[in-house]
Length: 325
Image 1 (tube, one colour):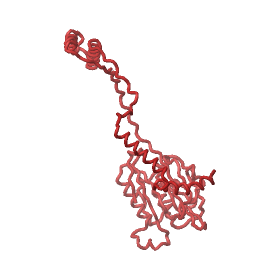
Image 2 (cartoon, rainbow, N blue to C red; image 1 turned 90 degrees about the vertical axis):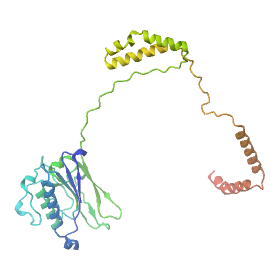
Image 3 (cartoon, rainbow, N blue to C red; image 1 turned 135 degrees about the horizontal axis):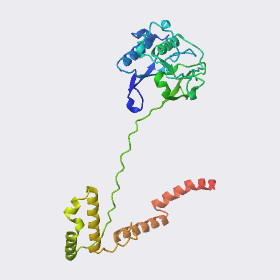
Image 4 (tube, rainbow, N blue to C red; image 1 turned 135 degrees about the vertical axis):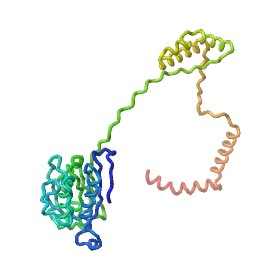
């Protein structure tokens, strides 16, 4: 299964992730496949590389049932004449060269099987390098598969990356064994750099507008209108000669000045000493008193259902409380 990851997530090039499971070479599933699995993967890589002007990044991940020991992969020079005829050769312009020497690959599994040799030939032809055993957390090249009974371990689960993508791989971790499974989970970390957009321009702080509590009267309204008409700063000629922002500030300041001068402010409202206080409800108080009276009467009457129930609960909990004390 192939997944396409766009460069918008912070990658330099398009990335194609192939999630694989290759049955063992001795499995009967191979007889039902039209072409060998590794040959199909090589054909897909050839096709994906041909539809882009610049070769994209390739990342293979999964259980390949390929035991490769420490044989060289796509990070080392290879001999094209020794390639398996089952794996088609890629055109030379689609091959990569490592941008910098990769660290040597370590592997705790020293066994090589035929499917491992074919897997390495695919990596060499497609210029892919195995990440197992090359990261800080997997320097020993830990085994990824072990029998549930504890008999035998191997490294058959791999991450293989194209060489230009390899510098972005920060780590690979082989997690502990999962119960009821003979494979261990692999965690690969890739550094993505999202494009940084310029910060938005800082908005100019809007002047704070004070709030007034006033009581206008007919006389104060007339005086306010006369003050606005006589103010030279509020004349249309003066305001139109100013820049828009300065004209708006002048208009606001003059209006607030005349309001505070002509309209006498009202005294501030008295604070509410009881913000959650509700008005008196005689019917509610009477119901509460009646309910409390009936509750006390039921407790004092040994024949009531409430007293009988509380007595049963007391007999159940009292020995437990005594034992705790």
